[in-house]
Image (cartoon, rainbow, N blue to C red; front, side, top):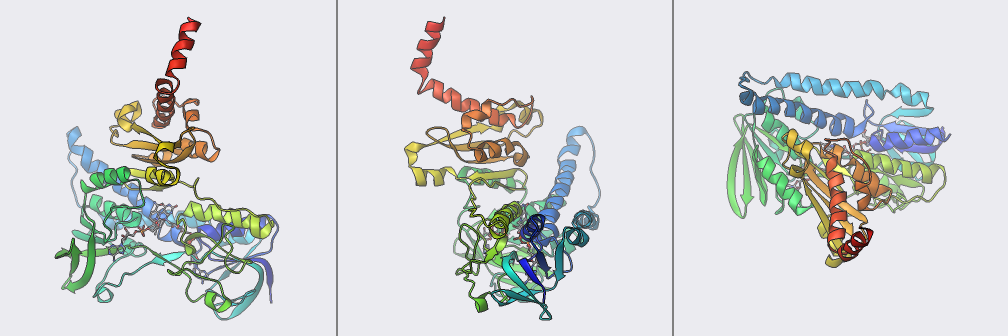
Length: 476
Ligand SMILES: Cc1cc2nc3c(=O)[nH]c(=O)nc-3n(C[C@H](O)[C@H](O)[C@H](O)COP(=O)(O)OP(=O)(O)OC[C@H]3O[C@@H](n4cnc5c(N)ncnc54)[C@H](O)[C@@H]3O)c2cc1C
Ligand SMILES: NC(=O)c1ccc[n+]([C@@H]2O[C@H](COP(=O)([O-])OP(=O)(O)OC[C@H]3O[C@@H](n4cnc5c(N)ncnc54)[C@H](O)[C@@H]3O)[C@@H](O)[C@H]2O)c1
């Protein structure tokens, strides 16, 4: 029976990073993937297809939104099959880069089949083959939750995994769940021509986000689709080809008719049927793997990364966690994972960007008097005006001494123009440093220069104004 220094279960964003990193340091590595393809959710049902669809939907939207203004006519029926073929082409493109043979070339033994633990140091693949490992990484990801709604099992519906099978734009699309998955996908279909209604049971729209950002996004998205919060779907029923969706809105029963239904109410960690209970790896009350800051499970030689522990469900977070685990499990270091410098973006149009603490979280932790907020509107920045994207803003949350505690932004391509702040925060530069670098003119990133300038201006006008005046007078 083969024995390895490290056995990685799941060849997605997290698992691939660990396997490659560990092999590069000379460890003997087995990577086990149950699907015929490697790449995980991000490549097949998550980031890649959804961001491709987002970009295609933007193009369609821009044609419709702008044609008339230039005296042009945009006519014809959108062919969804062409769009979906393009999405598949992009997935295939990444497949050719991330081939099985590349892993084998790196010295990784790739096993295809469902892995489950037999003992603390042994796994079984498809109940046929067994391999032993000194250490393990569980990187099995997550799956869409199918909510317990009356009639759902008998009513055809789509999830983020199956939506790409649609070949016709539905006239009416009801979307259950108003998280990032469905906001991105829902907006795409609105742009392809569907009448989209989003139903979310939560009272607050995107409750984890900064209130002003969430409100601004909701206002913008409402221009393209209907969004109902506090709306609990209680029944779905198929009548001929239509679907009747019944929901309780503010306590009243309402009904909406749809041609298609998209469900996206959150993620369930892939922790069942892999023998975790049997070997004593502890899960929390929603079946996520419990990990410590070193990403060790309750069995210290077994690590878990990515969606399977549910702490920070993003591809790049799974990647960073993978690097931490390589250092701990392969090099024997004691590295802790930190999430406060990991940004993320929801790729709606406009995008929203997030890093670190929100204003509310910072005030809760440090008290109102110890927290400052620097606000800059996109409308103050020349480039946003020239491109007609001035409806956006940035909020940077700082300590009294200018330490960057967090930042949130809304605006077109926020993901790109906020990167200088990610660097500054990660490298522990204070917010004033943002105005000490030169940005090309006119760039959207200039908004961060304005953040830095605002900080200094406030300092000169309040705290230091008396001293500055005196200095300037003496110097004259
Ligand atoms: C619609 C959508 C859009 C998203 N967009 C973004 C985005 O834009 N940016 C971003 O950063 N994140 C995005 N995410 C989140 C991102 O996809 C996940 O956080 C990321 O894929 C998690 O990586 P992972 O390695 O934990 O799991 P995965 O990438 O899902 O990999 C898990 C792998 O384990 C395999 N596996 C499971 N069980 C077993 C077993 N028993 N034996 C062997 N193999 C097994 C699976 O087949 C899979 O290949 C999105 C998610 C969704 C749903
Ligand atoms: N751009 C990105 O990086 C991106 C995009 C999509 C997803 N993701 C990742 O995937 C994770 C999951 O996102 P998601 O949107 O699938 O889930 P989510 O948990 O973020 O949102 C689910 C939403 O569904 C609602 N809901 C739950 N049960 C419901 C019910 N029965 N009826 C109506 N509404 C219900 C919840 O109130 C919530 O608003 C995210 O947290 C993020 O980490 C990232």
